[in-house]
Image 1 (cartoon, rainbow, N blue to C red):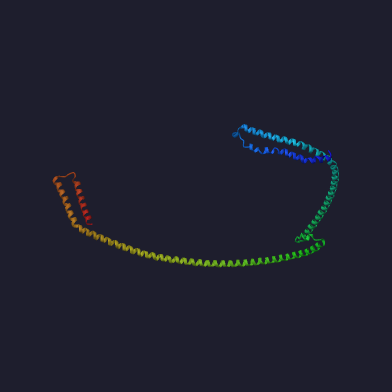
Image 2: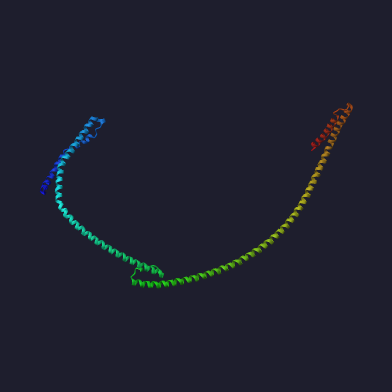
Length: 337
């Protein structure tokens, strides 16, 4: 197929699209009514109506798909023709393009190889230079350490000439610094030694003073203890004398109390004797009368037994009469008291 023929087909493409669109749009009024069938249910409308509605929708769907296939047949033929012509036209173009692309790729690969080689050479040189610089720097740091100089990283990167000048000055300064430190250390040691001696002398002085003070205090304590012991013995002697005097006084008081008790007892006894005598004197007439009465009863009983003959209970009756006499006399004494 020629290019002219393709132009003719291209001119009719718009007409074909319009005709296809019109043919498919003919189904739109029926599609817009599809939602009207959605509320149909078996319970409300019955299985017959629901089945008819579904079959009608299926027919509509099949008709739409059938029309799609009819319209696509022409489009597929057009697409196949366009692809065949394009392939025929692009084949020589692609062949020449590939040749030029291969040449361009070879040139770019060569340039990349040269660039990479240059980069690697520069990187190796840079690494070597950096390694040498770091080794020189470390060597200078080692020199600083050996010379007793404080590490100065900036000085380690000076130029050779500047480095020699700086290192010479730093060595001299380090030597002076060591001498100053040694001198300061010597002075510090001497000062510390002097301080130590002074502390020892002060400690010895304080020890001697402490011992003297301890001895003085011990002597004071001994004297005070002796004085306290003497005072204690004196107090004990005085207290013994006081106890002795108090014992004597208590003995005198005891004797006086004993004498008073004796006197009170004698007086009490005399009073009791007098009261007994008075009582006896007061009872004497009663006792005499009771005695006379009881003796008369006993005498009467004796005469009765003589007149009436001895009885087996005579002795018992005499004893009871004597006892009754004594009881009567006792009761008389109790009554008077």
